[in-house]
Structure formats: C-alpha cells, structure tokens
Length: 74
Length: 456
Image (cartoon, rainbow over all chains, first blue to last red; front, side, top):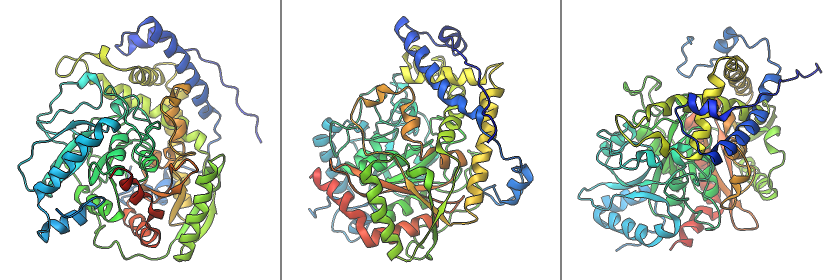
C-alpha cells in the first residue's frame, strides 16, 4: 500500500472566522469554538488521504446511469 | 366515539368515509392528547388548535413555511416569523385534504441529531424520557411514536428522518433527492435536503409519498420523471437481491446486530436473497458530509441578517455558529481546494461506488445507527456528535439515494432497534414493496403498537 500522505496541521482562528461569518462571539464561545472546530478539522482532513479511483471519469459515471432522470447529461 | 388509538392516516380516512367518526372528532382527539402529553415530551413548538375544516390533521416539522402559522426552525432568530406563503409540501398536503395539526420541534436549523439544539428545549424520547428522540426531526418522530399525530412530515439532510424514526420506533422515509420539492423548506444544505414522511405503517408512507412527490417549477432540483403509483402497487413486487455492506456492521450495539440477524431470517423466509458487498468506509462519508454541509449552511444562513425579516444573528445558537464558521473556513482562500473541492471529488467517488454496487444488488440493508437512543446530554462530549452517530446515513444522503428506516425490536433497556433499506435513484416503489412484505410478516415485532400503547 502506498505511504499515506502527511497532512499539514491547521489551527483555526475563531476571531477571524467569526468576522468572516458576520457573527459575534463571547469569550467563552470563542475558546469552546476553537477547540471544537480544531477537533473537527483533525477528523475531516482524512479526505486528503483518500486514494481516488482514477477510472471514475465523467464518462464512466454517465455510462453507469448516475443521473436520476436517465438523461446522459450533467 | 370509536377508539382510534394507534390508527394510521388511511385507517382514519376509511372510518371517516364510513361515517364512523367525523373529521372534528379526530381533530379534537389529537388536540386532547397533545394537551395531555406534550408537556412531558415537548414535541410541538406550535399547536394549531383552532380548526373549522373537514380535513385530516398531520404534524409538520417546523422548518416548512406555513402561511399564517409561525415557523421558527426551532431558532430564536425566527421566533416571531410568520411566513406569507406555504412550502410546496404544505400546499400539496392542503390540496389532498390534510390540515396542519402543529409544527414539530427539531434541532435548530436542523443542525443536529438529538433535538437538543432547539431554542425551545429538547424533545424527549417517548420510550424513555431520559433519552433523546434523535434528530433533527425528533419532534416529528416523537409525535408519531406517542400518537400525538397520525403521521408527520420531516426533513432529512443526512439521517434527520431515518435516525429519529429509528430511535422513536416508527417508519421514516427519505426519498431520492429531488423527488419532493424543497420550495419553502428552510434550507440547511441545499444539495442534500429531502422532505419525507414519518408514519406508523408503510401504507401511510407510500400514500404520503404519492401526495408529495412530483416536479415543481419553483424548485429546479426536482426530477422530471413522474412519481410511480407507490400506494396502489404496494402489494406487488418481486423477490430481490439485498446487499449487506460489511463495513456498516463493525462496532454496532449487540442487540442491533442480533435484531438484524432476526430480520434477515424474515427476508430470507420471504424469498429475498442476500449478497455481501463492499462500500467505501463510512468514515470518509462523515468527512465529506461535514465539509460540504457546513459550506452550504454558511451560505444558506447568510440571508438571516435581521434586516428584511427575523431577528439578528446574535440569536444564533452555539451549534449554528460553529457550522457557519467551519463552512466559511472550508470555502476560504487557501483551504478551499484542500477541503471543499476534495470533498466534492470524494462525493462523486461515493456516488460511483453505489452505482457499482447497484449493478450487483437491488437494495442494501444496513443499520440506521450504531446504538439505540442515547441519554440527554451525551452529545456534549463530541464536537460533531451528529455526524458520528449518522455515519450509516451519510453515504446514501451524499449520493442522493432513497432509504427507509423501520423498527426491528428492542434492546435490553426496551429502546427500539432499527434497520434501513437503501435503494437506487428513484427506486422508492421497490423499497416500499419490500418493506410492505416485511411489515405483513412481522408487524415490526409489535414495536410501533407497543409504542402507542405506552402513551394510552
């Protein structure tokens, strides 16, 4: 099996994100949110280690009738 | 008056047509039950206790806009919001002789799997008031289980119909994405959200699916293909091949696994065949769902600025703030390609994985949740509890596939266990037909019947 890719550790800044999101945070919320968001990020970064199946092109998806209305269009 | 405790929608409809009971008597009956039991369950946010019409009452989750009736999405941001239009689901119910009995409690903005994030207090599980009913359609699950409504409409992004149905011991049907219009449904994640029925039996689910399904010009994501005759063809159907995904049965509660074996024997006896299948691990589905859903939430909740309607954003709860912030993070420069774009690519991979499997099997049988209903307050331990508890529901939701959860028995604490059948795109009819055969053979091991009797 290929070596799993190393994923860089990212630390979220709650103040910056709150500003970006047009939200106000209390001091208590800020520390709880930073902890929760960073824990979540630690988990979801596993998608960067997924080994994609190179044969799943758009053509193969269409051939497998991936589209609910049966039409071979995106 | 005829005793109607535990009768489903269609059974009540039949009694009314036979003039054994009137619409008013049915309505008054449920209002009396709500007044008696809702204080303990907190399953309704708004009860519509004035009715002059000859219509059958049904409960609706409080994220469907109802003209003239307060619609809060269980958030104080919309505490006084009264829509001036109906969701398409509501219009179709009204056109088919239903009336709105009340708006059920839910996780605020549908953000959760416990109904504990509601700004109007948590709903309790009718099977044990120390336990949660699941979510986010927990109020809808509870009202059906305790017979405070003959049926309810919920919505699902990833598990929000199936999981509370499983924990409350009722039927929960999530249709194919686009089968039922989302117009007027307060958006959570627009590429996932699906309205769907929660009922006491599969006939009612089939009937409601027929009422609600169909293309809607006001929702461009609805499918053109007309709905099938779900109710009329319920008793038909062939014996199918059912896939069992090995990855979904790791680390599940002992009784859930035991009741799965018991249910599998029933399907075998009914002539269904089983085949082991391999699917991409649900662990990846958790990540894909978490990322894409948060991104869509951040976009959808940006409209709640307190300018044109509703209250200001400082009324958002902790969970909503967390989701909005993570959503904006995964969409922001420098992180978009590592998270959002990668999640979208993996989403296509998961869809292709299901397409491959559905070339080998007709349906998939899987657990709904790893365990029976948890106690109130347990979700506080986990930063994204909902996603972990819904890991068996996220893959089908990511792919937009239909699925139905149904009760299979109890654990040693007398809490319901459940299973789900997952179908291919627009294969709602075969799901319903298969479940109908199971229902006729087992009556869900009396779970639904005992649940209603508990709240006599």
